[in-house]
Image 1: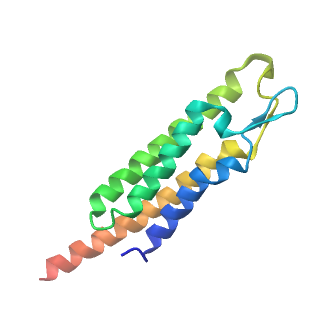
Image 2 (image 1 turned 90 degrees about the vertical axis):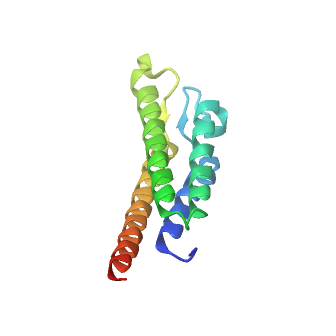
Length: 136
């Protein structure tokens, strides 16, 4: 069951949350130095939790309902992370701390897209199994 398309989507979401946070900076401060996710502890923990939740969800293929629920929780976690980024970038007066936003602030959006695609595929599989059970 690991060869399904939702596994690919969940794996891409895990790679975005666990791997790309080390490559792309979240923002640059006024001095011009790049700030990465591991420099901000709360953001780093949320990214790691999102990636681990995606990996755990991959191996829950026998329990599609739980896999679907874990996907929804992961989407909510990424929305919360995106909200934190928006709050930090808009509420700081005079842009003292965040001088230039980086591509790392958009990583939760990419993760959300792949998690939604995975949940759609999980729902499609669940509907297929229910329709086959009705024929028995």
